[in-house]
Image (tube, rainbow, N blue to C red; front, side, top):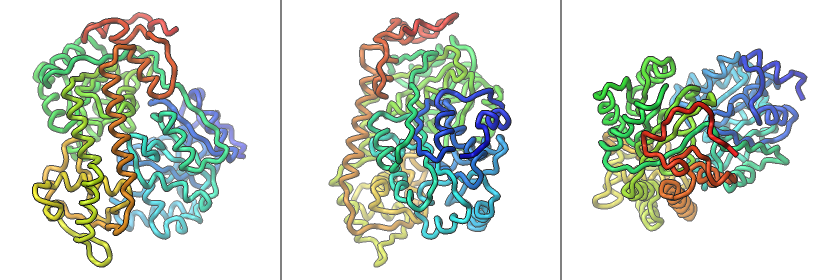
Length: 508
């Protein structure tokens, strides 16, 4: 156990007077050498739970995290607190990766961020051993579970290294149902862990779901909402094209807004995010690419032009509103036609087992003696059968990669990048490894889980009861039958939901 006082470190390095609920218990657990699971709500300060131990323990804290964009933001945040931090990714030059690893080995790093796949690179753990890993933190830990909303097979294999890195393990997530929490504990092999599950309830948030209609109708209603709301707002749309369309329409109505999606280059995304954080414009229209690392406390309104395909995603995105505790609104639009679109997305992301079985057989036939295929996506699509598009081929490959039936060696399998797919999927060059014998049943479970989550979204959208109660029930919490602050409890129409609030509604 370190003698450093966590509260003193928190004040000195981050300027916070004290820990938020749940943080100190998790910090003290890992400082004492104990495993821990923390389920903290969006905005609950997960990063502090490994940053303070990294300052106190000495040696190296390794943080497993899923996205390079998230790693970049986490490195900036750690550096702002006085931590020496870096990340490793496949997109970096080999000489840069070697330099980062050498810094870690020589004691020049306190925090190292990496994707779970990095742990499986031959020789990596042996090369890291001299660094003296004192804590292994698993961020976005719901990615471990097939019943989570961002399943990553490599996350599920993290538990295999427990006996090779003799350090406490800290699992962190903002969105996990009771089923997923148990899956995390079991998969990571957490030993006698401290479990901190903070309430998902955000009493300052008002919830509403309203009739969708055409995109034009939804934009007009969003404009009315923006006219009633005060302060910054985020409008989420499902694809790059719809983001640009919504942004253009709102700008034409005089709203100071910008569009944000993965199709923009990194410099432009950084500019837009920075300008929004600094208040240079009021409204950002975005895909789900916007949000990781966003900690703007005074967002007053989050509008979803269409509900996402999981309540976990919706709660995480909508939960970017009102992080300062002031009254804020989360509004989404939904129509029966949206459910069909959602099912279509699941069909593409999780094809039926017969389709995957046929795809795997054809890939085996294409592969060389070493089980490797090097080809353009269009060539692979042609080999998979008449009428198969490049985007469909990438979706099938992605589904097989999720269960370990194929392995990406070079290129990208992002067939559904924020809902639009690559502009020219067929011309992409891939190098993939194909397993000649692979169990496909996990793909069936993933498909069933995705369909179940889609049905939960529909129940939330069309149910007659309190919205807040419905959301909390999904995450395993009991809430009063009426919150008094959602459209179901107040009977409010779209713009009328955003009435001025002098005091929070009755929460009892």
